[in-house]
Amino acid sequence: MTHLVEMKGIEKRFPGVHALKAVQFDLKPGEVHALMGENGAGKSTLMKIMSGIYARDGGEMFVDGNPVSPDSPRAAQDLGIGIIHQELSLMNDLTAAQNVLIGREPRRSFGRLDEAALNAKTAEIFASLNLSMDPRTQVSTQTIARQQLIEIAKALSYNPRVLIMDEPTAALNDTEISELFKVIAKLRADGVGIVYISHRMDEIKRIADRVTILRDGAYIDTVGAAETPLATIIQLMVGREVTQSAPVIPDTSQNPVALEVRHLSRGKEVRDVSFDLRKGEILGFAGLMGAGRTEVARIIFGADPRDSGEILVDGKPVNIRTPHAAVEAGIGYLSEDRKHFGLAVDMTVRANIAMACMAQFTSRAGVLNETAMKDIADKYIGQLGIRTPSDVQQVRLLSGGNQQKVVIAKWLLRDCDVLIFDEPTRGIDVGAKSEIYALLEDLAAQGRAIIVISSELPEVMRLGHRIAVMCEGRLTAILPGGADVTQEQIMEYATQRDTASRFSEEVL
Ligand SMILES: Nc1ncnc2c1ncn2[C@@H]1O[C@H](COP(=O)(O)OP(=O)(O)OP(=O)(O)O)[C@@H](O)[C@H]1O
Ligand SMILES: [Mg+2]
Image 1 (cartoon, rainbow, N blue to C red):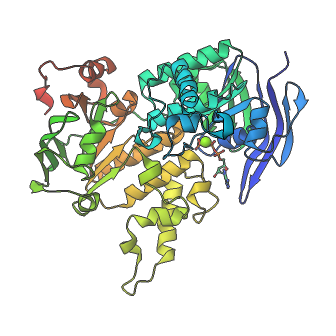
Image 2 (cartoon, rainbow, N blue to C red):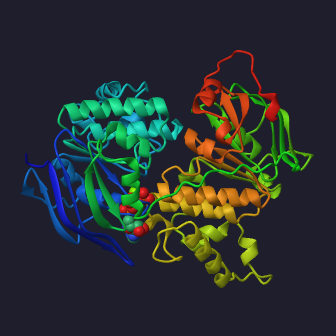
Image 3 (cartoon, rainbow, N blue to C red):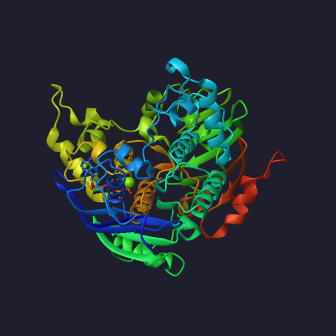
């Protein structure tokens, strides 16, 4: 069988980075080919070459056996190659339909835009995705997850024969992921070849036919998904065995309470939520998307107002109305929407890490102590394994996962007594995940109080000393962490609709 696409000996260099070293990859019609590797391994770069965004420095590429060198996204589209990017690239001020059919809007005579046709055509694509959304909706009003779905619709509008998905599920919930997988199954049945990039290991078994692994820009192997154990794939990715340290749950029941939340309410999103967080404790927050976990965090952080309720820090009531005031009160929040709130992408890694506490690096005369900033930046680059040629690289030139590590470093450096991490490991590879877990546990051991919100249950269960479960704005349970809790128990409370709220008092 001829390959839809074949790449051989692909080379790519950036200043200071040999991003791809003689990499090979091929794609057959009707298969899902997963591309795996740690953050910075070269996955996105290889796919940007396939889709005409970057030019390759060496090697060959074939479509249907014919040599090609797409030199623009347009040229790649003409070859039938479409890509859904890791970073969203939508125009926020336009409608969903205007984004989906951008540059190809249906027109009437005299070149006037045909709104009706534009919206109808988009509605058709949305329907094929099982997505209920008005095509006239402005993109900026939509959640990240729904923007991701608009991006997918846009790629499908070109009727691609090859569709590259670069971490399409990073921001989707379980229902949305299932919908996406149905779309993928349909495309595959139509003979479309799909390249699938994800750090969610469980997805690989669910949808991939073959898996190609890259490590440090080098091609490692291509294996069948069904017959290869996940542990083998992980080992090929990281080049060593990843040992999952068993969580040790310290006894923090006698520690002073760092944060008290009493009867917190805001509309329907947060309904009468109360809990305590002790110094040295990690409280995991589980729940389905929209359960109200992020809303609780945003109110505590002063990013949203509350209707009623009280927040106490070290036993004293505080009235936090802005994130600035929250940081002053010793509360930090790593938002789930890091692209918009976390990073100055045109600045260097060093500046981004140090930015959180500039005062610490500024002399009384107002002079920046660059050496101290460099030392700190280098420390975190080492600790978190941030892959960058140096600490003065611009953040936008780092791979997606490495950008996220920079945000984490920023918050680790801030001297906050209470730290709230919202989806801290989204887009982060398996190896780096365990390093981040270890860092959070270290912080707790130093006496910080930590909240971890995660849509990945194993993550909440791995980290949480106790696990708070939310459903439809209410706190439905606080369960013990560690070996004493099962996924089923958590799910039961996460789906416990308006019945009387049960509390397992013994662990409170
Ligand atoms: N435009 C660029 N300029 C300089 N370096 C770059 C550029 N694009 C990528 N790199 C570097 O090339 C390497 C590979 O990056 P790439 O984005 O392909 O990684 P990735 O495998 O997609 O990682 P992730 O899982 O984090 O998304 C990284 O070291 C990255 O910093
Ligand atoms: Mg990437």
